[in-house]
Image 1: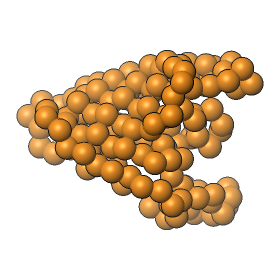
Image 2 (image 1 turned 135 degrees about the vertical axis):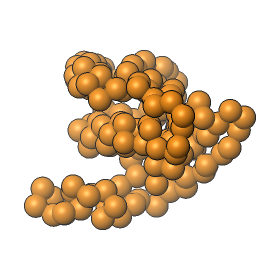
Image 3 (image 1 turned 135 degrees about the horizontal axis):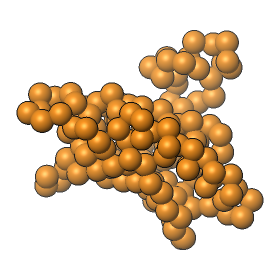
Length: 146
């Protein structure tokens, strides 16, 4: 869904107030993997060595320590594939979007929480995103100035 819009982006900002539960963290990691796969597509003259991926999210006392620990682990892991991950907590936060420095903005009705529950660990749609069903929501792709 996002792949073509990521090509050529070197700075990506995700605004999503709900990145705290395990499946939401997994969705974020899958997005980061896609960023890594798409960063050098599209015939750009210079290969992109690193992409800055910044998350702005919200949290509450119940989840914040686990979220910080998870985000720090993600940052360490993603650095090995050229993704410089950073995060911040901001209140109040409601709208959800992805802003890319290649001129695209993606407005997400549900944030990265797009996928219906899979059939479990032993179902192929758990491992192949293209096999998953999406939840009902709107996604708007806006083209601005580069």
